[in-house]
Image (tube, rainbow, N blue to C red; front, side, top):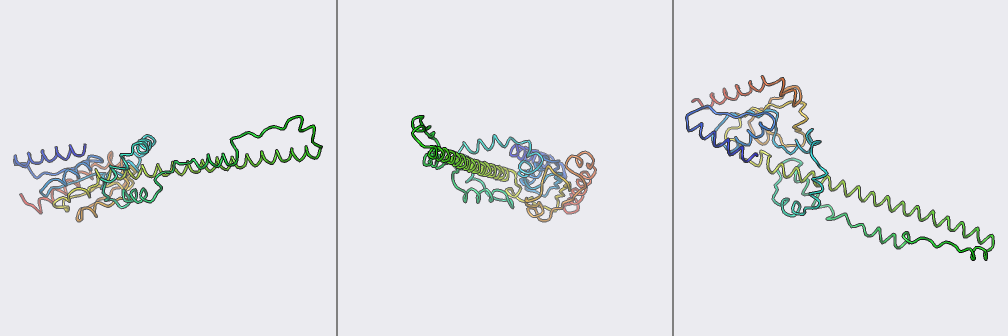
Length: 280
């Protein structure tokens, strides 16, 4: 989608420029703002850009933001676990450009055990301690041949053995559960970081060219935006030195519904800035 939009935007901008229209600019809200940002990175001339309610990458939107709750992580974990192509091939194609994104995933995978699903040692331990074989019951003849003291001793030993078996079997079950929980946690973390890496590779603006004149960019962001988290993500001001970021009160939805006057003001200001620097 992003690639098609960048190509379509370039075609439209070239056509408008050839036909003599101008000044040209691009804007968008939320995902539209991010797509507008990607389109401008491929335009070879100074151009006003006003991305509203978007940031430097879409990875955080689907991994830590509100929309991450809508992702079917269980299915993605299953696919990542069963399809080795993700780890063996795609991973090597990804490059790091976020402060905590795929580099963390690469380090985690590199240092973690290749596999945690070999639990055969638990079965071996069960065989060693004879947990799988039932204890033979005492025959009536042997009970009759034994004295009362011997009967009491045998009864106590049998209870003691049963207690030990239950205790050790419970310990192994607990160990198995802990191993399974660790394995599940590792798989969740690995698939999440893989998702961040893939999305950063495709959507992080640092993977694209810097716009010709970043001073013509006015970013409008909501201070309480839970859809587009900014924590742990490279700032647009770092990626595009010279751009301006304006913060408004409210969240993603309230800003879209009630703050569009501020979006329009940013568009006016960006075009005025363009005309002052590049008179037509």
